Length: 329
Image (tube, rainbow, N blue to C red; front, side, top):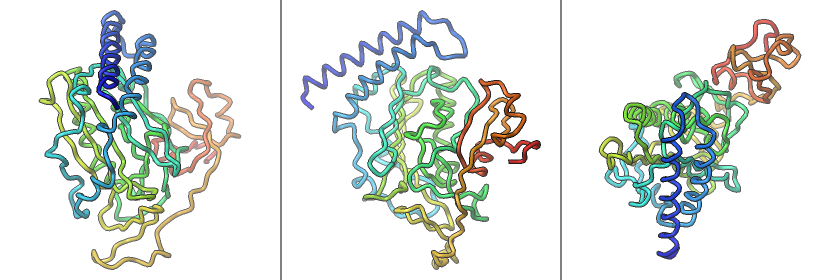
């Protein structure tokens, strides 16, 4: 990209951000996202997407990062680049709300997710179901040594509490319970608490890193930077392992097996997988119950509370829904 083109894009970003701030100043303060502001935010996202996708300086090379990552031991993450994120000086001045989710690649894998976290994009509704999404490498696997039994979660690249994204296939990867809870959650909570307290903006970029054509990411790179205070409140750059203590993972496929005594592996043919059976269900987002489509309770639901999905029963339970006592799905 030429210097002139970068300057032109940056000017557009500043203009859009200024307009967004003006709209916010005129908008009524309530608990819902203002429609007019959201239209402007969409426009700003388009501008930032152009800059982000065409400026090679913004991109992280997976092979370069993975080449310096030590093998997983016990720590959930390691610090990268002296904990300094790779945002440009232009990006660090942006105070407009935006969210960018890369298209899935030819293998169905998620790419970079990038947002300016602020009150405007945080969720105002209860979390919805995501069980209908099957990220690349997804398998339904249980182990007794894993908290909650399930090895894999559908991990949000940008956490729900930060941007309110539910069943967005561009924002969900196959991630271990360890990655999700012991790794990403603490950083998400840090950003959430900061924004809630200060109402400032935090640039937040999550890059899933894959080895060659693997379907499951080796880990994720998370960068964050608080804009208004020049990184004094939030500033980090970390790689979080997509690993699980006591379990070996084939990242090419998502297959897994137990580790015995920390050295020997159980035969791969005896992996603790269960068949991912897909059925049709109806969710009631108000009661947090799920039903068979033929259940009498379905006809009594309000349309605004009804979601019809095709998914796995145990996935739906993991999403916080309980089976209807009437139809016993």
